[in-house]
Length: 319
Image 1 (cartoon, helix red, strand yellow):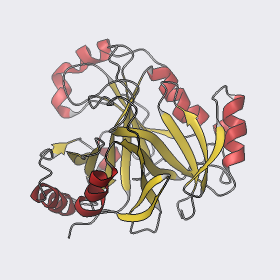
Image 2: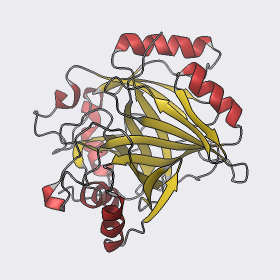
Image 3: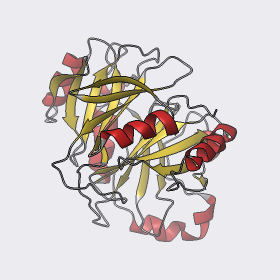
């Protein structure tokens, strides 16, 4: 059986590039890992990556800021709803105070027995910082932003998916991926993502039959996909064959993302999942190690369009 080991990254479509960069690097204290462009289609849009200084898998949040082309979607049901990141036990109060002081409304809540800080990205996408019950990863520190080891984000905790039919999503997550179901109660469902390093990462599923169908296309203000780490190509292709063999045929062929390779599958609950593994060169493929995320880089297949794409991008100060 093919294996998954944690999350690889989470990807969302946002609004302004400047507010996006400031939110992740200045408010949350993540580091710029890569600045490139949307590889699909022809619209000039940034693809921004944030995470640990070295871009470790399971720490990466990526965004497509869509303000300049003006493409916006609808948040709703049958769609990923919330981005969740892990923080140390006892760090929630620090984050509530820090975020509110920066005019980012933050409140402390509890769900599935875990204390968490609820907040929103400037474009409106729900985020949570979850006090994780088990997370051996070192916190991401950012001295320039006043974030130390006691409070720093450790990486991805998971995501919340809103669905109309919880049974179909339960079957997909436990049989197709497969994940381990940890909870099934009035709050919803919790599934643990297997991780060889012992990090507890999760998919939480809530039922929403009242909201309209959420947007599935790349569109500002919505979460696009949740990427799980297959570790290598062999596991990726085995898992792809397993999923397709079960009848989930809305699954893509492998796509070259320059730093990693991906396959995408639409779940019956609407959320788009990605199966990804990092290539040996990884983030240092086009920037020196220790200097990743410092410059705007383009994949080789856009060599003849660099000038056109750069001219069409939104202006922002990535300092």
